[in-house]
Image 1: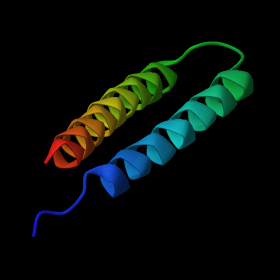
Image 2: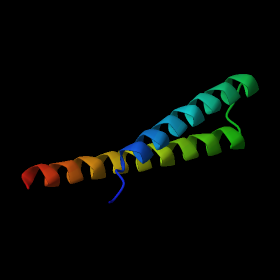
Image 3: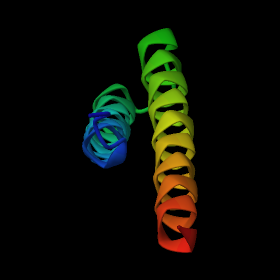
Image 4: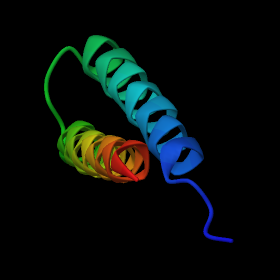
Length: 68
């Protein structure tokens, strides 16, 4: 049986939120954007993108299973 992409989507979403929180804390501490802050924002964007892709895959699979 194939595993559902829903847990991976939720995990990537949570990790993305943590990266955003961490980036905000770093910007506030340094009072400016640093390379580290920018990298955290890039990682968060990648995690959000991956999460949304997994969510869309989950809903496509669910839609295909409901048609059967």
